Length: 455
Image (cartoon, rainbow, N blue to C red; front, side, top):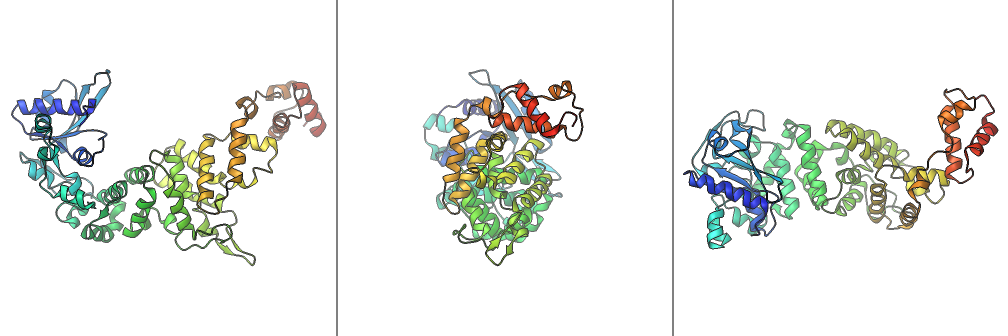
């Protein structure tokens, strides 16, 4: 196990807790990841020490959830960067009145009792880092009271104890089961999955922000298609994203979409999202055709979806509001959905229109959405390659040049600001982008030619 700063910080915390007479172990996802030969992102510590003891033992701490036994211990790494380690007191939980958090917790000195209230067996193992350091034997250092090692070997996500109770306690665990199954390409154990289906409608007890975050992780961890197939199979998709669920069975014209219906097409896009993809691009891949179900029309010549990009943008806006995306994220997701059909015209666009198209923020995401859209349907990349080549060839100062004619120039020339002012500026800018004018005087002459002297 490589001695990363996060690991060394957590190990130091365990050493100090042990020296003070408390039990302390690594807990949860870091143990799972080590057994899977993956590098953990962080290391959590579980201990018999109560929060007040933990707060008093370390020089810099934050009581982020002391009511639930959770304290953040801040350490300084070798490069001076602060490392946050979550230290949680062993506990057993009372009733979960809100479907997310226990109404009361009872601190415990039993590690076995602590893991029995956790979510899934693969996340319920403990590890003794001191035994690992001394023996170098990972197997001997793991404490497994819930059968997590067997489920890792069987590639199963299984709730600890009674799945009905685990999901009744915390509804978010249903989405987490899907996310872990997709991330590791595991199956969800049969009884566990059955309980997700049985309780899927209760997911609305979870805050919109937490639902959004879980879905975003599913979309950006490299197994988005599997995650959404599992959401569909468990009934969660109909609950959290009914607009996406409506894509199922919506036919498409086979000459453009030989792959199948809108849902199949969308899954093929999700399949092409790599781990670490920008969240806005991932959400746009999911939602780019969300306007097709309500615009489906079987016309005499072929199936049509007239205005589906515009309708889809409105639907995507409602989803972003419901899931409480930031304004910045919402703007980019909606721009991607709204503009995804414009690539069909790139070869015929005027130079000014093309350059304005290239000005869209993070245009590389627009290009990538178009590429995977094509690869998930007819497979033709001619328009993508044309747009990509022009985008990369055009210097930035040609796409967004310093304007030859400004509003101040128009005012000085005698034009009064008003409803048509924007048209005058756009005329001059288009001509500049197309190379038809090269000076301020030529721009003003063009404006006078089209609008007279007192527009």
